[in-house]
Length: 211
Image 1 (cartoon, rainbow, N blue to C red):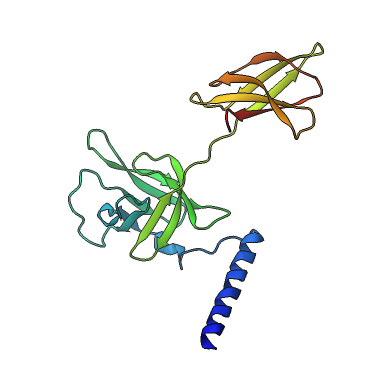
Image 2: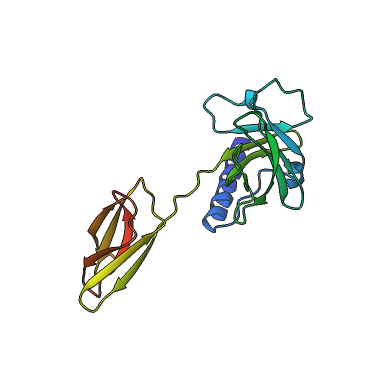
């Protein structure tokens, strides 16, 4: 009977979690107090599991770290400011000013300077305590291009694709109903403008080739 009650309680907990996710509720933070972040952190890569994406940081005063040519360091303040160690090509590393913020939709993601280079990126907070910070770098989403269309009265259509990637092939697709699409024209790499023929009442969109 006791085992049955334990299983029943676990089942109801599962339903509550699933129900919360289905309603689009904000995920619960994995940390007790975000103020744990407000200190100086040093990359303790010796503690990381081989092949794991989890980055391990310890408070800079936590221990004496082994000698290293470069060891990432962050310092966070409560006003959204931070500093991060810049990786100098001549080993003249120095602390650079930066900013940090929690993600508006998911408090388990933090936007902060990327390790060693400083570009703003998002990290998932896996663990945050007074003595440990574990992060996973979030893969930045691929930017979708903007397709601008200018039609003439003679059936000629001018396409302009903005924000495309040199390494990708783009397809302009055509549809008469917004449901069924066919390839209208293929462009290798980014194109600034292209003129083609098309039905004036048809819809057009840009898509990655094969995507």
